[in-house]
Picture 1 (spheres, rainbow, N blue to C red):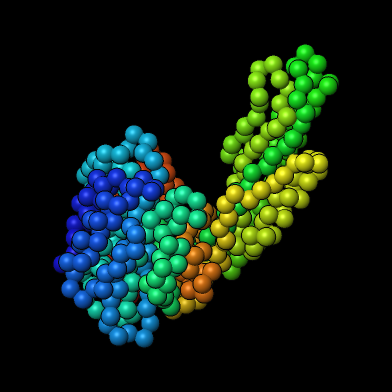
Picture 2 (cartoon, rainbow, N blue to C red):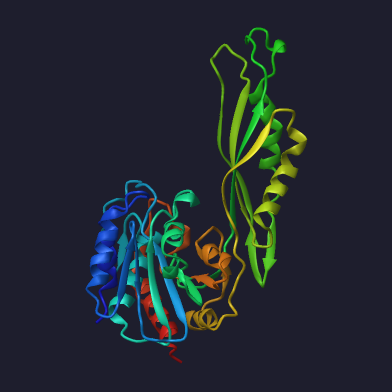
Length: 355
C-alpha cells in the first residue's frame, strides 16, 4: 500500500538534517527500510542502502541525499492544502519520500533495485556519502543505470554541469597609507581581475541536443591588514559551473587564461573543490523509458548533481524527481501532493517496465 506522500514528506522535513548532521534522518530511513520484507539493508556511517534480490539481469539505482542546506526561517514544515512548505521539501525530502514509498510498496519489478540514501551532498565533494560507500563497500553502488531523485518538476534533467571552485590570491607590498607609493595595494590590483570575471560573456554549449548555460561568479572577496596599512594580500573565490563538453582540466585552463593578463609574480590560482560534469546519457533503455513516461521535454541540468558520480563510473544516469529546482536552497521551498504522486507513478512504471 502506498503512503500519503505529502504526510511522509512532512515527517522527513520535521527531522533536521543539515549537512554533517544527518544521523537522526538516517536512523528513521534505516528503521523503515528494515521493516520491509525482502530488502537487504546496509548502513555505512549515516548512509543507508536497501537492495532487492529478485534475480533480475539488470539493476537500477534510485539515489537521493539526506542532507539540506542550513535553515532560512523555514525549518518548521507547514501545510497549506495539498502543498508542503519547509526546509528540504524541494531539495530533496520530497524525492526521498518517493524513494521510501517505492521501497515499501514495490514487491516486484523488471529490474533489481538499489535505494541509496546518502549524506553530505550539499557540501564539498570530499565529504560525499557516495565516496564513503565506494571506499568501504563499493558493491552497494553497482548498477546498470541510475536515477538521482533531485527536484526536476517531474521532467528529465539530463547530465549536469561541472563545478570548479578556485581561490585566487594577489600579492602586493605593505606601506603606510599616507605613503602608498612605497607599497603595492593588493586589493586595488584585484580590480581588473574582478572586471574580467564580471564581464565574462555567459557561454552556452549544446551537448546531445541539451543546452547548458555556464556561469562564472566571484563568491567571496577578502583582504586588508589594518585601516592604516596598504594591504599586501587580497583573495577571492571563484565558482565556475561549466558545461559537459569541458573536462575539469579544460575548465581550469579556461579560468587561468581569463585571469592570466591580470596576474603577476607571486599570484596564485588554487583549486579548492572540483567535481566533473556529466553528459546526457539518455540512450539507455531505462532512461529512455523515463523520458517517454515523463511526457515532458528533456532539459539540461543547470547545476551539479551526483549524476556525475555515476557517469564517472560508467553508469548512465539522469535526474528526475518532484519539486521545482528553482526553489532549491530558497526560503520558499515547497512541494505539492500532485508532484509527489506524479514522480512516484512515473518511476514505478519505469522500474516495472510497464507499457
